[in-house]
Amino acid sequence: MRGINRAVGVVAASALALTLSACGGDDSGDESEAGLTVFGCNPENPLVPQNTAETCGGDPQDLTVAKLIHYDVENAAPSYDIAESIETDDNQNFTVKIKPDYKFSDGTTVTAESFVKAWNYAAWGPNGYQANYFFEPFAGYAAMQCAPPENAELAEDEDPCAKYPPVDKDEALDGLEVVDETTFTIQTTEKVSNLEVRLGYTAFAPLPESFFEDPDAFGEKPVGAGPYMVDKWTKNEEIVLSKNPEYSGEYPGVEDQITFRIYENAEAAYADLQAGNLDVINQIPTDSLIDDKWLTDLDDRGTSRPVGVIQTIGINPVADKGLDDPDLRKAISMAIDRQTVIDQIFAGTREPATGWVSPVVDGYEAGACGDWCNYDPEAAKKLWDKAGGYDGDLTLAVNNDSDHGPWAEAACNSIRQALDVECTVDLSRDFATFLTDLGEGKIKGLFRQGWQMDYPSIENFLVPLYSKGASSNYYGPYDNPEFEQLTREAAAADDLDTANGLYQQAEQLLSEDMRIIPLWYATGQAGWSDRVDGEVAINAFGVPDYRNVELAN
Image (tube, rainbow, N blue to C red; front, side, top):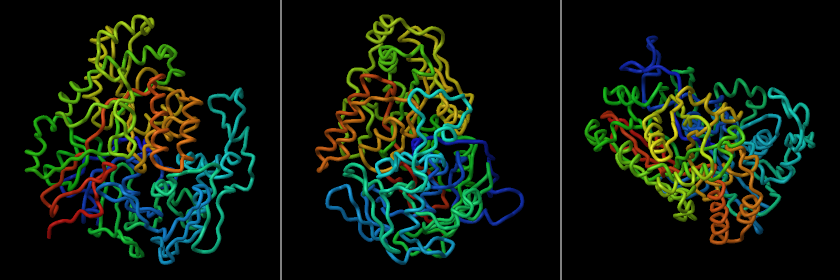
């Protein structure tokens, strides 16, 4: 989630924006005032599915793109959407047949080539797309990447792709082949037991020909095959979606128009919700969670559920040599009183994390973090002192355009008291800047991370974050050959139980290095206005099911 994935999925809201007036929109009286209005934030990148790794861009794209696989709202169980069948005898060679009647919102037909060309474009290293890593299992991927030698010296602003271009000049994956208009094949370099589950992620959406004619223009007003299409994107204000008149799939939307209003922070959006100027919000300000004040505020127009989201604190020991010793990082983890932070800041609406995988997915095993995730200030201080402590003050960086300040202050306070080290919260960046600085290794000390699963699998909580070269590996990067080997073996396993066992072994390795400190498993909340007819459901990814929200007449 989109850690940031979406990261890509990083869970966060963002950005510079307007707190919109009672009727929404600007003073021009345009048509954006009609229909369902929901909380939104500024996308990091143009709206291209293969280059979106966060929720601000990902949430509207979930409504505008269709994929081979659809995930059930309640449990994320996969089922076919554009796919008519996906067959394999060996988990390495797949034949995909698509339904012949699917169309993009511009009226053109979704074909096998719509998938193959889109995936090739994302996998081509010089394009620098954030979803590039998701195509790593496909045959031919390595030859399409920019690959500086291990000891290559590059200037800070030097483009590695200009100096070390990919070996493959054809810009196409060997593992993809169009058979006919509705059939294509996939070959992976090794067995991938959960490939079908992965194919519901936005990175695997098809793209129309208009994208390849002008990718920049497409990113401003994209064309997809989902139930909605982008009518208008006004930066820092709103993204307006309307029903896709060409949509022929099984998952249409209810309301004719959905507007993502972009807010500066959750408090402003919550105030608009209470005033009846916004219909749905999925970020309740933390001070409104205390004693379920938000449910009183909203006259019980709210709901919550466990979701596939985990909050962590990251450390990049390459950027900050002062935290190079794993024992220092373990001491910090033991110094955080997770339950007290949860009770005081989130009114008990989170669950202390004991590992790096969410309990909502198959393969979750409690306790992977071991004692390092148990609050033990005395043991933490002893380990901290033994490792030599930290020279200077610790900082905990969080993006300033969401409601992370209160919990970060509480976590810092816990660290300060247990380790006798000054800890301050750094709120100097918005979400987009935060991600950019992380990617460039500019943030020292501690930094917040969150992960919203891209697809329902234990693998998705490990590989896209902690594998060598992963798009959301901001931790040095983390590079553990044993972790790589175990996750490769897990991907190639013939049955789910074997795969899950190997992934669990890989997860255990994270506790040895402790570059990522688990904090808590999230519970998603959604609140809605009295204009909404019935309740708003939250899907297993933590996103309100906007497609099925209906306004009262």
